[in-house]
Image 1: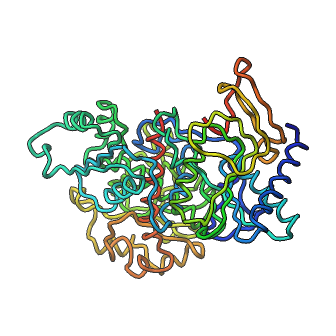
Image 2: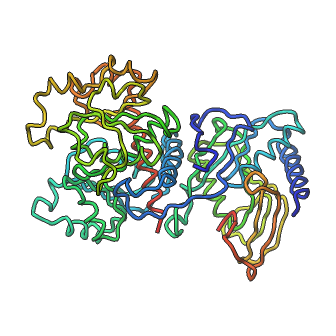
Image 3: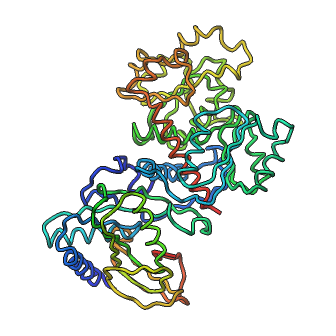
Length: 183
Length: 341
């Protein structure tokens, strides 16, 4: 996926969100650390261009809610959550880069419910790579990408990695540190 | 220190415009430490990681229902061979907020009274499934001994005169929340330095973060080796000033210490009155410090001895914030230690 593909997918998802919600009223975008946060900001910027109204953006770190804390080798740095406002009664769109097993989204749902009670929670992802382990499905998808379980989907964004790009590294070519959004 | 959010100090719940949401750190830092025994072997990056995690924990504590399940199924034992209010209570609270099971043991009422040795006690607790052992002991170095004889993680909650790393970390967090980056800041530590594990951990932490440390006490309450960085086992470089009025001149913050009368063998001070006349931090003395300089005290306070009551309960006092931040700092450490293998 090139930078241009990425931009088009973002704008399309922005339109889809607005269509489904009939506007941007009560909408809150919540990006999941790390790369969901810049994606949520891009979606918000696109929505603002279309509707002329700013949408609040928040950041969510699911570190405290992971189910693999004790099996991971090391603790992951926990980024402070940034909630734009009280989320109770809002229509919340959770934004992440890659949807894989669904376990991160499960953790995010627990985190959100501990913070407040949104009227509705939806899920927007840039890449859906399949291999779900939980009954979770996205509401908005940038691109469906069939992958093998061991493949590495690398999303790079200019805000975090200096450039926009999505690449799939097949299992046998893997070298270097993993960049997956989920394990 | 490389993270763009280091300077981010605004309250978590403040409404933010889209452009103000800080960018996530592009590289995740990881924690590989088994035990937290002192700050002397911490790197500035590790301290930074704890302080940033603490900010995330403050958000959890600010919720209507302050609970998160990160330590569900983890057993934490607090083993206190010495009296404590805030340290033990805040460790217990920190563990419970994160969903851990916390068992509190004190030397009175446990098998320690029957003569069980420290090593046997620690092994027993491990056999019972304790994964994190929070320990306070009157003997310096006791948590190091415990750490050698258990697979559990050990957090030093104060050992003798030696170290109190979690107090050091919460003091760093509290100072930064008021005066920002500590590099080059003049931080004055006043009082009974010789008997103070808090002072030692504060000095290590402050020096790692680049603060300029001034230590002020009567010569009998200064440890040997302080201010002499070339000697073996020396503390980090500090300036020693025995005149408090000179020491607080231009200070960015003043950290007071409790006069530890229970650890004094006598003869160190002519009288309590003379001590408080020369070394009490009060509003008159604070007027020589930089405007807005905060005052810290690790507690419990001897009001009217090392700190005046008016100052302790005044606007520059951060004593309550220290207690509140203590819970968040301990949550951060428990979280980081549980996740590291």
